[in-house]
Amino acid sequence: MRRVREYRERRAVVCDEARFTAPIWECPGENHLQLEAYLAQFVIQPLPSDVLAWVESQGLGCRDATTLGRRYVYVTAGGPSRPKVSVEAAVEDYLQARELGANRPSDFARGRPLGYWGAGHAVESPQDALVVLPWSVSVVDGVVRGLAQNHSERLWARDVAVTATDPSGVEHTWRFPLAVQPGEPMPFEIEGWTGSQSPAEIALTVSAEMSPRIDLTRSLGLNGLRYYLSVEELFDLYPEAMVGTAIPAGDVSFIEVLIQRQAPTAQPRLAQATLEQTIENLMVYAATLNDDVVSDVFKLTPMVSGYSGEEPELEWIEVSGIGTELPGIGSTRSAIVGAIFKDEDEVFIWAGGAA
Image (tube, rainbow, N blue to C red; front, side, top):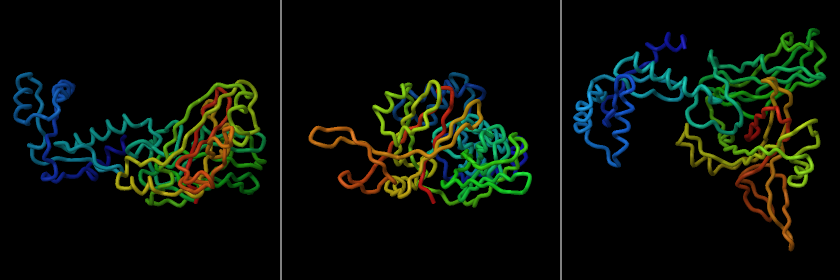
């Protein structure tokens, strides 16, 4: 936040007065709540003069900012803040919006994040690079796992590689095939590690190509349901390719996730292209976390289901994309993946077209 305030003079700009003709109501304290309740009664909004007359009768002290001359907005990668009458007010409005949205996976992007299922992590020090999240790193049986995060406010990361270097100088590298959105975490799993078993002693570096170019294949809605079923029930309902053969010991959960194309609200001009795109090489990754530490990273198998035969039986078919053609089925509009994990674990999922 200190960094934001330090740059406010440079990044707050004057609005074009001619572009804002609708009233912009500003009220002291929480008086705006009474004004909003009053305006909510009308299907067609009353004239500003009538609203001001009501405001005066209630002693609310509200005013229409569009009549006050110069107005300011705070410009960010996600767009401008609401017009305000001073630089300080524009910055404060931005800070409040940022605080309210801090639980989103992308702390910078507007709208619902797509192509991702999981918790968000606020970025305190933005930079155009990917950064390993130290608290997430684990070392088990020669495998180093963890999360890295894109700390850029506007750049996407492609060709991401995470490298662990042992004390003798030998490098072990893991590559992530999906583009990583601004503010988004991503998993890594490095096998064959023979160095220290302490995560704090492992030298981890991340390389990536940073670009403002958006990857539309990440514009996928992920909608999931978590089931608490026995292993036997899972294999009765889902194919082995989806459930997998590595069944965790103890109580388990299963998450079924529907993946389909969804228009991004942050880039409405790309809505039509997103909904009409064909994703040829759909790849889905999952990571499980226990007490915020990554315990496993694995690929999921996208599938579609349907009934076939004279006596219809449920059939599952693996798919390689969305919008692609399947014999006897036609164009695939969606796909389903599933992941099995321990009850106490948290699961993250990423989906998109591989480069």
